[in-house]
Amino acid sequence: MNLIDLRDVYKIYNEGYENEVRALNGVSLEIGRGEFVSIVGASGSGKSTLMNILGCLDIPTYGTYYLDGQDVGEMTDAQLSRIRNKEVGFIFQGFNLIPELNAYENVELPLIYRGLSAGQRHEMVMEALARVGLTERARHRPSEMSGGQQQRVAIARAISTQPPIIMADEPTGALDSKTGEHVLEILKGLHQSGTTVILITHNSALADASERIISISDGVIIDDRLTRGAAV
Image 1 (tube, one colour):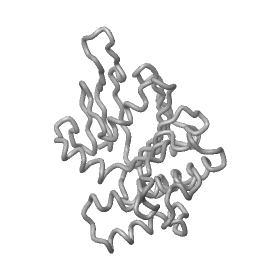
Image 2 (cartoon, helix red, strand yellow):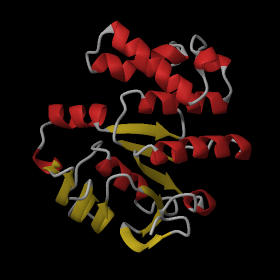
Image 3 (cartoon, one colour):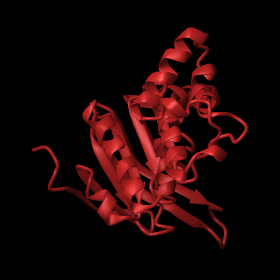
């Protein structure tokens, strides 16, 4: 069974009106457990809409989405929220850190939502910060850190709950090339440890680091190929 299974999925805005937009136009896609996949496309291609559906931030207008065998379209809002908190870790270009909280507190947030004890949270936060090399910055706020450090905090927050899926939307877009390479190495490490990594990017060089590249244009998948580094 595939971890992710999209079948003839459409996402339509203003359906039936003159300004109707088909952000996704009949997308079918399968992603196996433990894959490292890049979804590439120009601005407006539908790649972010696809990520929102894959991450249960949105639901299809038509079609079905099975996540680990579960029909996402049949889930309540509460069930979708639990899926997002337990199954998926999100990394965004803009970091999305809370400026009033320090690194430790930002990483701790999803663990609080899961109702874990303070002791459990502390262990998991410090483990996540250690994986991105930021234990010494645990008490610093975002304003006291560089962009690269902030993105590493965002990655630590995404992995703190040890989710089976990481979705990274242009995670290096706001970083210089050297820092971006560091972030990419972290994503590769997560993949090597068994995490399914889905990278959304317009950067073809970044996409080449994955095992598989899915190209999307005008809401339609136009190419799906393995990269040279893919396992055979």
